[in-house]
Amino acid sequence: MDFELSSEQRMILEYGDRIAQRFDRRYWMGYAEKHEPPKELFEQIAADGFLGLMVPEAYGGGGQGMLEMALFMEGLSNNGIPLLSLVINSTMSLALIAMHGTEEQKQKYLPAACRGEIKFCFAITEPDAGSNTIEITTLARREGRGFRLKGQKTFITDADSADYALVVARSRPHSEVARKTDGFTLFILDMRRPGVSKTAIPVSIPMPESQWQLFFDDVELEEGDALGTVDDGFRILFDTLNPERIILSALCVGIGRYALRRAVGYASERKVFNKVPIGAYQGLQHPLAAAHAEVELAGLMTHKAAWAFDRRLPAGEYANMAKYAAAEAGIHAVDVAIQCFGGNGFTKEYGMFDLYPMVRLLRTAPLNREMVLNYIGEKVMGLPRSY
Image (tube, rainbow, N blue to C red; front, side):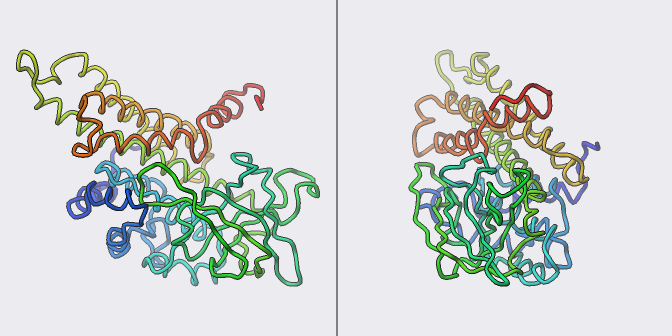
């Protein structure tokens, strides 16, 4: 693995520095506190050709891979702009359609999505299944030459502003399959279809993205709405779930760097007692240095996971370890940065505590730390199954 970034990869990483000159953390927080999408930022990213970074150039995208997408998220998050909509729309939805869609689906959705004219959400989580995707009950039953979709999804990011949803459903009930992973199908659902309804889930985290419950009441689907092979959707599911973990790891790494950079700036100027900058005291310097090391180590694992995914190597091991390491490192970095600021760390003026809810969320979602450790223990280390 070459640790040196190419000139193009460096440009993608540094794009966050450039765009933050116009759309900075203060701009992002203005939308985060209202739970409204940052329209101008989204439009600028689309105009600059970054929404479809993982979409082939033939369909209006950038023709790049997972590593470049992770670098893009790192660059934004390095500047305090953790844009979750890029996870759902660009990384999980557009990239999956580019990999597994029919030619008709690619032509229909990808060019418009790359231009920012249509948006996607991703619907997999259910109230009673949670992290146990095998137990989802949303069912797309055969009816004539199509399907009827019935069920419920929860914690669906930006479902209100999405034009389409990628819905993970069972096309055969759990009780009727030989293997528990059989009978899954992914569908591209037009959110304007009759029978689709939604209700908001109020959350306490300041972020532009909103959370929703989705309800499907006999929603009509066509054969051409299926993404990939009917009944064999589980096979391609991790082509979106591993990228989700990688891109969120990049987000945590970036936010950790942003918090530490702010803390270093403050600790280098703030003076107390003997008029020495507080950053000279080991009681502050060592925690900041340890947090920096943890963030950069998590960044390396994130890059390795992206590198493996781009080469179609098994990436689950690295993606899960990156998710674990980056979430823990991000939380620690933000925590020590807040401590460095003292009472100022909790004020709106300094905006440090506002960083904490986002990184703390990513210890729990979209796959909680305990399930990540279960995977590492069983699938990587060979320990007995624990659940």
